[in-house]
Image (spheres, rainbow, N blue to C red):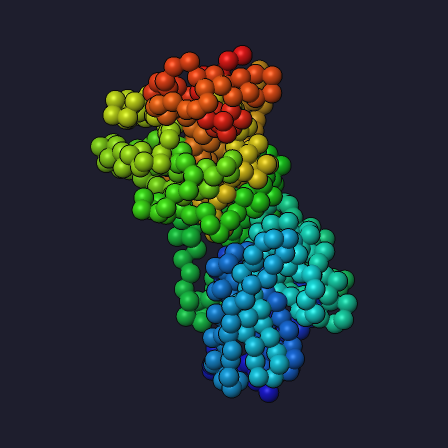
Length: 482
C-alpha cells in the first residue's frame, strides 16, 4: 500500500492536515497559490492506487486548469510507479456542447477524470468529486445539484477555492460553515457533515518557508494592485457583489475557449472586426479591444495593452490594427489625451471608419448599458482564463449621484481605471452605432421589409451607415425609406 513518504514529497503542516483528513465531505477556504490543488491531487492519486476500482472526477474552472490538474495527478502516480498508466483525452457532450475531458486509468481499474465546469458535469458519474476553485465555476448551483446526490453511496466530495465575491454555491456553503468573516472559523473543525479548513497567506507563508518556498508577503500585497484584490485573493475575504454592474454570473456565462487575447492579424476572419480603444499614457494603460462579430455574437480576437507607451508608437500600433481589411469601424476615447491620437487616425482613415468618443456621463451610461444587455443576451465571448478582463468588468459600479443621475465608474488601481471594460464598451459601440456602407449597387433596387421598404436611389457614399443590429442588413445596405 502506498503511503505518504516525507522524504519523497515535502508538505506544509496545513497540506499534511488536509491530506490526512479522509472525511467524506470537506471544504477549504484558502489563499491563492499555496498548494491546495497539489495536496488534493496527491490525495486522489493515493486513494486510486491503494483502492482498486476507485473513480474520481476533478471539475476545474477552465480547460487549462483541468489539464494542469490531471498532469499533477500523473506526476504523483509516476512517482509511485503503479505499473502502467494510461492517459487519454476524451470528449463529453451535454446539450450540444463539447466539454474537454482528460482521463487517467490505472491497471487496478481506478480512474481519474478531469474536465471543465458545466452545469451537468456532476450528473451520471458514479464516483467521488473534487470541485477545484469552485467559487469561480459558472452556474455553480446547477453543478452542485448534479454532484451532491452522488455521495449517497459513500462517495466523497472535496470542495476547495479562493473566495470570489458573495455569490454562488461556494459562498453559500462557506457562509453556512461560518467561514466568510476573513478569519479562521471558531470551534471544532467538524461542523455537521463538513470538515472545515481555512488558511490565508499570512498563515501559509511561514509554513511554506519551512519547506524551502519563501513567500514575500509585502511584494504580493504590492503586486495585487488594490485592496479589494489583496483581501479576496490572499486574505480569504468574500467581498460584496451587490454594487457590481456586470454580475459574476454574466461574466462566467461569457467565457469561451475560442475567445483569445492575443491579436494575430494573420488569423482567418469569418465575420467583421470592430475595435474599441481606451487611451492612456502614464497613469493608465491604453487598452485596444478587437472583436470579431459573427452574426450578432462578438468574439474577442485581441487585447493590446500599452503602458507608458509614447503616442507615436500607439499611433503606429493602432494603424496596423485599423488597416486590417476586415476592420469595419473603430471607436476610440477622444477625452483628454486621446483627442490628438483620434484626429491623426481620422486624417488617415476617415471619420467613417474612426470615431472619437468623448467620455461624458451620458455616453458612459449608454455604453455600460449596452455591454450589460449584450452579456445578458449571451452575445459577448471572452477567454476562459483572463482574470484581468474579469476583474475590470467586475470593477464597474453603478452609483446614483446627489442629483439622481446614474454614474458608472470604477475605483482606480495603480495601473487601471477599468480601462479594459471601457475598451470593450467602445468596441460594442463601434458595432452598434453603425458601419460604413460599401460602394456600388445591389439588385433588386427595392426590398420590402414589413410595411416599409429599403430603396436604392443612388450609389452608396463612403461613410453612409446602418446599425449592425438593423434587420435591413440581411437585405443589403441601402437608403431606408420611411
